[in-house]
Length: 379
Picture 1 (cartoon, rainbow, N blue to C red):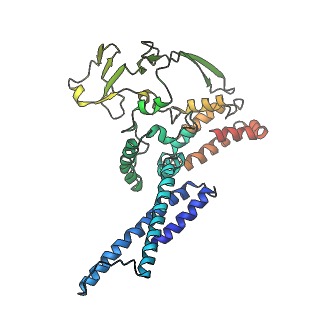
Picture 2 (picture 1 turned 90 degrees about the horizontal axis):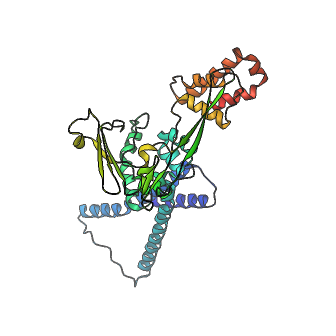
Picture 3 (picture 1 turned 90 degrees about the vertical axis):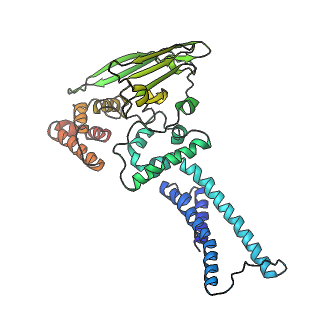
């Protein structure tokens, strides 16, 4: 009965998903995980029931015989045909579950809203990043079955942490057991190609009434490394495969790095050791080959490092009007507060900003109410 119930519901959900009748991520969880588990649990009960029946017969001093199969008897032929048909249906259902389940569990919707709901800030930041079109698994797992299995094994302990509500707030950095960037990031970003320089303009706004803007222009010598050109320049001189930079970190966050080793393409080795480094640093610290994420550790989940930078970015992008008096100052003040929860923060920020403009800038509040609300919403 469990198998029939699970199979029927699974087929209904499969048809609904195929026709696009539902897109809810939580319904997908029921569809690809819970119903197949219910179906398989029913199948598992069948041999268990046969075993229990044999034990009951044995307890009643009735000889437990293996069932006999005689295809010359019409009833046996019908039962055999039914078993074969049901087995074929079981194979089809389990195959459909695997076919639908694996892509679903690799989807961004599953990672960001179902399985890793505790990482909501990371998911929101990801949606606003330059990598929003790249699936989570393309960076965190990459191609191949071996890393798929490793990622699922690595995720076992966090599952218990989420279930028991013992996970860290916030998510600890750096991420352990992350696949080397050579096998993920560099599938799109080819380090062998020279990138030249990049000009970057940063706009900052003041805390005065006019939100006075100032611009800083930076020229970044990005450069690159190439085995073909036999040279490395700029920030990315180390990106060629033949140049190896290794380091040892002595703290969990990899912020304290007392030892660095550089091996050039011609085999030249240079070591740099901090003056206060312990004598056993090479045997006690974590040794790691530097790759992309050691520097670009927020490229998929870019967070503003300060409230000021967050507000500057919102103003520069046009999300917050720049001609509302003291918009920059008041938004930063509201963001710098301490709140008990996300809901409390959203409510308190809105109350603070509206209260300021009602009392301190009433003309602006009455005359440009929509723009004031844009400041509130953006903040």
